[in-house]
Image 1: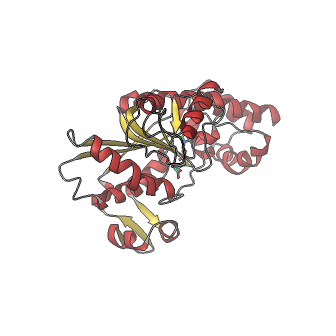
Image 2: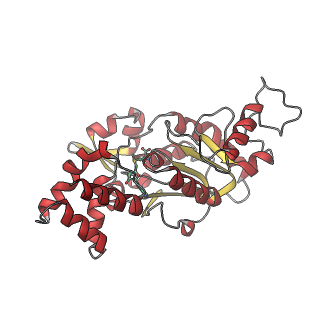
Image 3: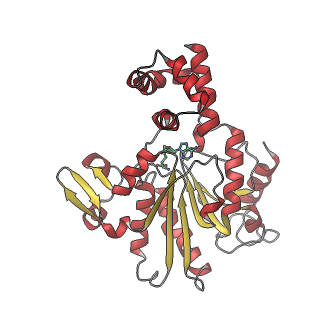
Length: 308
Ligand SMILES: C[S@@+](CC[C@H](N)C(=O)[O-])C[C@H]1O[C@@H](n2cnc3c(N)ncnc32)[C@H](O)[C@@H]1O
């Protein structure tokens, strides 16, 4: 079992980035062993042997999906959505006033609550955004969660977690015990299956990227690689948001932390070019710094670029 467990961990790390150790063995019992029984296999060893042969994409998909953590909820952690409303959108509305185009990516979207939360916020700006073309692209490795996301149907429990009641009443229709998002909000989000380990340049360039609560499952090399590729598809003056418990500490990236808003990152080059969207700190000497960046942000940037 232990050898098969190690081989399964290795397989999952290569295919999805997920890093597991012995402490996650119970997850194999609860999530993978039911697949072993369903397929009438002799045990984990036989399952791993089949996966390694690579001849059963459906089996591979089922095992990988079974091991993903899909926890999410509307307006999760609140702050990123407040920042989207009060920091990112105002900056981008000004910066993109000529082209009137905005592209947003929810990079590990799970069952869609993150992307739909953004879509509901954008509705608050409907008047200002008249005539704008806005794409919200939501991707995930798991087809199963994307199926649910596309339907936009949530249980009473799911809509009670983080969703303000006025938004529930405005954007959802009750169907029996469940709640379905309006066609209008659902039509704002495009869902696509995507493994972050693979090339994602096909998605195009984004002004805002949310990559929350997924990198925590990967090792440092994977995180660094994904963040480097994300930085390349982030507009020079775009914003990247990570999860509340995630940071860039120990990773070598070309991103810098926002001086005032925890969890927002920008391209280091844009910060150096001193874009005005970062509000200057008044408690730091600013004469020798690019406008908008206090000493804290610059030293954080220097630290990030020299670590890892
Ligand atoms: C914990 S959820 C995070 C959902 C949402 N971003 C949030 O913060 O609430 C993590 C999601 O990452 C997805 N995921 C895991 N590995 C992935 C990979 N290699 N590529 C794309 N998505 C992945 C999982 O399927 C899962 O839905």
